Image (tube, rainbow, N blue to C red; front, side, top):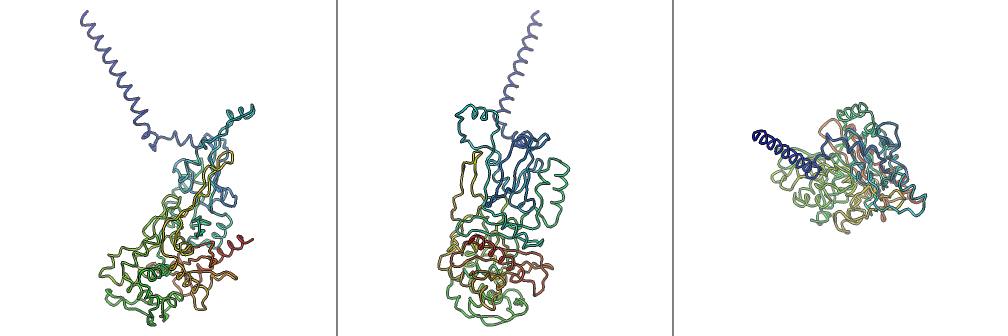
Length: 495
């Protein structure tokens, strides 16, 4: 009998231990491990819950709906739609069951998927009924981007690879941000897994990399647009160089290169002071200026304009423009000379170049770039509004004024490289860029702002993969695109 009692006691003790262990495990899972379980990619419960609720709309500054959720008749209850399709893909991103979120859908996911806490309490029987029977609606995201200007940017690129970024210099608000190649976010938001997977595979095997928006996620050789930074370095660090006359030449033997010769575009001969060099975009002259500036001053100026810094835009995955560190030029003066004209290893993001010229237009202060204008709640109330603020003090007002005069000469002088950007009745300040890539094609650029003296828009245009022929250059390919953007925006503003 004692043996039986002993076995019963042991069994009871074991059962108690198992119950205790189960209690501890449940508490661990529910309290200490809950976050990890919720975040586990294998856990689809949260994703299903998000797809089963309405999601806030994304709306352009001119009232066009760029993303919205509509009722569906499948298990997810709501379908995410992008009425403008590829036009805004690099801005809105996508909301995918399999691949998650990107773009503004990612950056403002909490606002788009959660309701505003400030709800008006019901004061009538009808309101009480609606309060308990109507599903709360999420917040809407309102942007600074103009759909009509975005469409002009797309039309002007006309299927060519590249990017257009337009910014309000005084606020940092992005007015247009278009990249090509682009993609259709509707396919990634499909409730059919095979459609999503097929599109994802196609996008990721495409050598043009549509998911890496050229406007803010990729870097390119900037060519002569970098001469804006080199000129700023002259005024900020060695002002006497602005009046120093560089001899007229067709080629410059680069130091530390065993006789390598840098030639001007199309074998042209050029020289003169900084204004003359800038107007015709003289490579040999700016290479000489870069050598006299030195690596420390040139790198410091690039850094002050935001190079090697990720712009604080409200989009995930933004890239930083790259300028090599000053020490990389020690005993490599040839690299310094080529870097001063935007070659060698110098690389620029279109967004960054747009911010640089916007900073010049804004008296030397670069405002933080942003796409969000405001967030409104389900009852139309403003939940939050963006407050413009500076990002960097790139240079002084005096230097900004001098740079503006250089850029005006590029467009207004008879021999300027940017004459194709002239807008009747408007003073446009600009700079061309034509960059060798080391391959069979070149990159063509134009950066500008207008009108002077009260700029309302700053633009950076990149047209990629152009033939290496004399008629293909920043002044003939990219400048007309910038002109169309500036002219359309200012006409609309004045009407």
